[in-house]
Image (cartoon, rainbow, N blue to C red; front, side):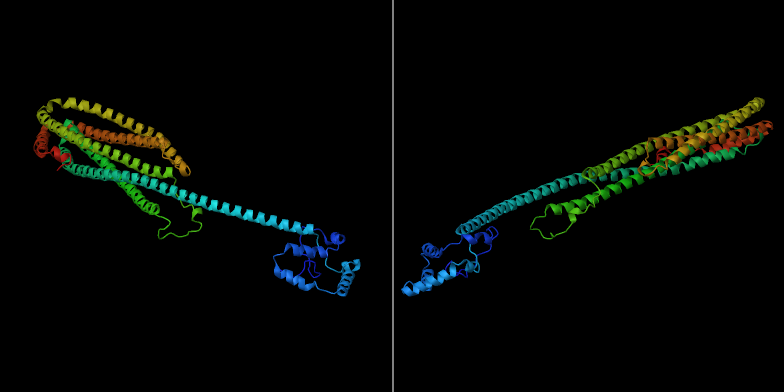
Length: 489
C-alpha cells in the first residue's frame, strides 16, 4: 500500500528489508542533513501528484512567523543531528542503494518475464510437436493394422483353399476306402472255396493223400488270398489312419481359420477406431501386459506349417489312394491267375491219377528225400529265427533308451525312424521265417502222410478221383468277377 502525502524522510518510515543491501551498521555514518534536499527532490519528481503537493504543503505551512521558524529549526536541530538521538531512530539507506534496489527489481522482473515468455513458447512448441507425433504415431499404427489385416486376409484365403482341397481329398479317400472294404469282403468267398477244396482233399485215403501240385496250388491260392487280404487290411488301416490325419489337419486348419476370423474382426474394429469412436476408454497399465504367444515370424510360420502339413498329408493321402488302386488291380489279377492255375492243376491231377500206380515207388523215394530236406530246412529256419533275436533286442533297447531323452530333445529324428524301420524289418523277417517254418512243418507232415499213403493200395484212387472231380471241381465253376474284386459292385 502507498502512503499518499507523507514525506519520504519521515521518522516513522521504516526501510524495507532486502538481501542485497549492505548491513545497517555500515550506513550509519553516511547520513547527512538531506531533509531539505529530499523534500525538494520529492516535489520536483512528483509535480503531477497534486494531492501529494498539497498534503505536503499542509504538513509544513509556507506562511509562518519568523519566531515559529526559529523554534522549528531549533527543534529539528535538537532532534535530528545529535549522535545520541540518531541511533534511536530507524536507520535509512543511501540513494544508491535505493536505485540499485529498483534496478534489481527491474532486472528480476525482466528475467521473470523472459523466462515466462520462453516457457510459454517452448510449451506451445512442445504441444504442437507432441500433437504431430501423436497423430503420426496413430497413423502409423492404423497403417500397421491395415497391413496386418491384409496379411490375415491372405492367410485366410490360403486356409480356405487348403480346407477345400482337404475336404475333397477326404471324400476321395473315403470312396477308395469303401471300395477296399467291399473288395476285402469279396475275397471271403474264394478263400472259403479254396479251404473247402483243401478240406475235401484231406479226405483222400491212403496213398492218394499226397502233397501234390493241386494241393500246393490250393495252399498257394489260400496264401495268395490271405496275402491279398492282409495287404488290403494293412492298406485299410493306413486309409483309416490317413483319414484321421486328414481330419486332424482339417480340424487344425479350421481352428486356425476361426482364430484368423476372430483376429481379423478384432483388428478391423481396431483399424476403424477413431478418437471420436464410441467404446474407447482408459485401461491403465495395459501396455505393460505381455500375454502374447507368438511373434510375426512365428505367427506366419504357424499357419504356413499347418498348410504345409496339410499339403504333405494330402500328398500322402493321394499316394495312398494310388497305392490302393494299384493294390486292388494287383490282387484281382493275382487271385484270378491263381484260380486258373489251380484249375489247370486239378485237370492235370485227374489225368495223372490213372498213372499214379506205376510211379508209387518213385514217389516214395522222392518223398523220403523231401522229408530229410524239409527237416534240414526247419532246423535252418529255427536257427535263423534264433539269430534274429539279438539284433531285435539291440534295436528295441536303443529305442527304449532314446525315449528317455528330456523335453524337446525327444525328437522323432532320422535315427528314430531308422530304428523303427529296423525293428519292423527284423520282426517282419521273423514273421516270414515263422510262416515258412509253419509251411515247412506242414509240408513235412504232408510228406510223412504221403510216405504212409504211398504204401497203401491203389484202390483208394477211385475215392481220390471222386474228391477231385466231383467235389472240388464242381465248387470251382464260379469265381467273383474283376469289377467285384476291385470293389465297384
